[in-house]
Image 1 (cartoon, one colour):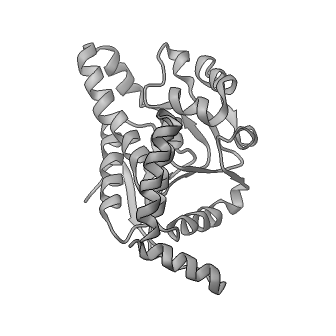
Image 2 (cartoon, helix red, strand yellow):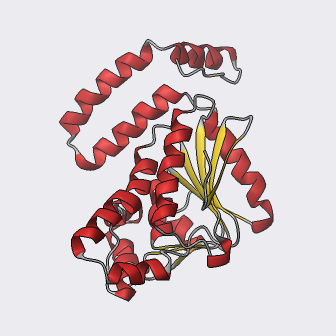
Length: 264
């Protein structure tokens, strides 16, 4: 499938890459970009040869937010049409990343502003270079984060820091992002490409069924109760204990070798 705003690739190591490719506008996005991200996530999820998905970019930034011309167009669009566009296109891309059963990694340098921040925190992990930063600056133009950040950020960084980001629009640079738990790792710019590859390869080697079940459990736990989670997780665990991946993992530990998981 062809893409206008993305570069989508697959590697021999089982890594699918989605790169936002609009460097001439600092990787600002429009509705079509977000539709393409959702489509790319779906295609890579359906591809049995892909074991992990990396969201990245060309150019200096992950995403500088929504394209200004698109925002101006929205300001002149009837509310019901805005709701459909935001829901279908912008939320659609974030939903696809958040619900993806495979490991997802946002790996970037530079800015992850508004839409970029929401895309990044929808991924399971965030690897950033030392010049990266996150910013939910929606409030500065009189709107709010509609793509999940208002739920996810307080859980990632705590209420006080989330208030700082959402209600003040304050940017969070790399070192602070690591301290808050917003980033999983910060690496020097010159080491970034190699570390991105190594991180993705590590994720691709994980047992797919167990990963998907654990990820679903974590997501349910954000909205559920302990009683519901105990019941759901004992069922998931009973199925995983009968899998070939569990047998392989156990044998590998006992044999002191690296496991090779087949997703069965």
